[in-house]
Image 1 (cartoon, rainbow, N blue to C red):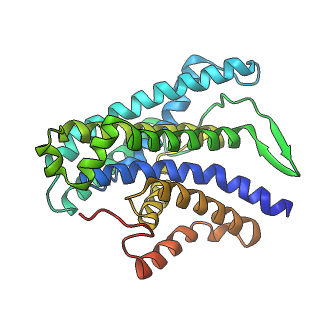
Image 2: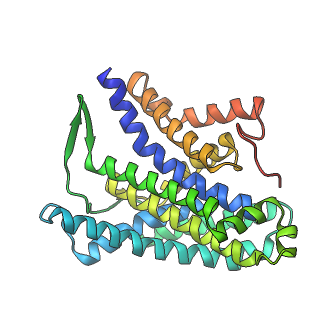
Length: 301
């Protein structure tokens, strides 16, 4: 049983990242009916910016007190969110908005081109080998009933949960969140009622981009590395989470992301790690056959 709960703990830390990236996918698609293929590269950019910020500030987690480490983590999160959010707004203004409302493959190809540009741009700047990301989280192992949980895993999970519930609060309880839901349902009716659709679209892309940045920070610190094509695999799995859960309910995407992480950890622990990446696409095939609109329904294009 200890191994079982250990794999659950391992899966929850990675699954929370899948969920955060998938929520960004779902949020953008719900409002703009655009599959933003550049979204995972903002996650990759977040991991690289984390390393650049920590290196520039010269912070060392091995000698820093806990309060200093928490303060540094918050600072890194804020700076990376600003960087990825600004990049997302540029992509929305010059790539997504001009092709929004056209045949779905046009924005698909446009954002795909930006994704490729960002991948090879990162490779040009940082090289093709993984870049070391210095940790700002002092290493500590917590033993809970025989289950080993590291401080980096705990930070990743807590950050993911906080982001997910903040997004839920924003969408359900705030004025602009209600406007976002209105645009997602019927953009023309929302515009007729006075909602600024372009501003809501900008806000949506900015929020989803900052969420991708947060996920990049936590994964970069968890594995202490970043590489140019890391967004590809995480992005594909996050996209699967959105398709499996359906983009109408953010709670469904949260749950599917966490479940995917746990199942992957179980396959790694009990079968073989070579089959781990096949789990997401097996889930996708099953959903496409039996529930093409996702388990809880999706907005139509």
